[in-house]
Amino acid sequence: MAKFNTGQSFADGDQVTGAKLNNIVGLLDIYSGLIADQTAIAATVSTADLLLIADTDAGSSGAANKVTIQKLLNDTLTGGTFTNANIAEQLTYGTATGNRTVSTTATISTATITRLTAGTTISTAATITNGTITTGLIPTLTAGTTTGTAGIFTSGTVATLNSTTGTIGTLNSTTGTIANLSTTLAGDFTISQGTATLATSGATAGTYGSVTAIPFITVDAKGRITSATTGTFSASPADGSITFAKLSTSTTEADNVASRTARAWVNFNGNGTVAINSDFNVSSITDNNIGDYTVNFSTALANANYAVSFGINSYAANNTAIQCCVHSPSEVGTPTLKTDSQLRIAIGNGGSTGNVDNSNVSVIIL
Amino acid sequence: MNKKIIYPAGEGVAIITPTPSYLLIHTIEELASKDVPAGKPFKIVDASEIPSDRTFRNAWEYQE
Image (tube, rainbow over the protein chains, first blue to last red):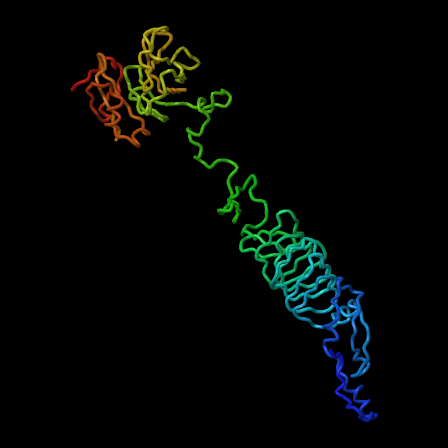
């Protein structure tokens, strides 16, 4: 099988001319069989293997030159644009568009990868030291600086992640640290450059409450103080605000205030027709006879075991021989009438038998 | 008006004088029901009806 076709043939006895010889050179065609009939290379193609190439830099009819696979790829990838290429080794220069499969151990030191949208990348140690990824699915990034506007990172460590216009749908970092994160949250909490900030609640920072001001605090359902103000109060209780029920009834004697107060008291004129001057918890005075009275309590006392104190006018100037007593048949007898609602008293002149009226009788029940 | 309550007591009569403070919130009838011994008859009288001379106070008697 002819491997060359010159387009020139000679017949028997034909004359060889210069023009025909020129045809052999100028019209020479090399049939494809020259390559197809060669033995296929047995070993893996290496970067040092050689090819023949027509060097067009030397003119349209440039001579054939040898070139290594390494030089061929380096020189052509530097400035070229390629589609549908498989790049299994280092990708170090140029701009590549279209679908690519990058080696699982590839290192991309300086690159612009505008879109990474298809395929499955399984590398756990891919490194991009200085590049831009505008859209991508990057399962693992372990080092370097990556920037992107729409990258999806399923795991790994990202030193700085800027997304000024894009959205990071899900950011999981169960074991790592996000050191410098800015984001806007749909709530009362924001994160900017790694600094978390709570939204203001409405309360003004300050100290509320003092010895003369009590704080009024409003708390919302989240436990935040949304309002804080103060109100004044008097250091001493308002007039009439302390009732008997507020007094201490402590079993500790020193603390018991209620027991120190009178359960009832009255001051009256018992001379002649009884006239009551003032009282507390006394409903009436019964005039039983001369110097014989019953104090009736408005509200019954807790029991009849109360103490009684009396005060009366003296019998005569500088003469105290007159007594006011609990009415009883004898000094050791049971009182005639001493109950939780009544107390009968008697005023006697120590110097004579019988009772006497008195114009200034005071009875205090404790 | 200065009212008093009288009722029989022993051989004589007892006279109840109400305190002004009690009458501020109660009637004298209420006072009578409280301070007159149960079952005793009583009368509400004007204070002027009570003798001022007590010389024979123990001789006073209750009259229906």
